[in-house]
Image 1 (cartoon, rainbow, N blue to C red):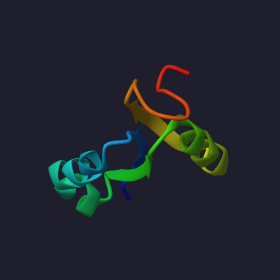
Image 2: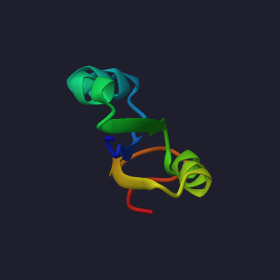
Image 3: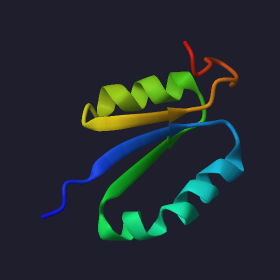
Image 4: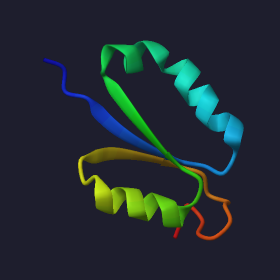
Length: 70
């Protein structure tokens, strides 16, 4: 059984999501990676509260509402 790595991608650029899904399609199909997406830091924090098994966060630095450094 494969242990999936849960990855939260936080970026306000809409095309970034499709790029990630395309680049990691084989790993997603195998169940190696499970991606979640948020468009700002506020939404990301809510997702982290909902799912504490997220092991990796990939974040943009400059975003509206709450940036990646905050």
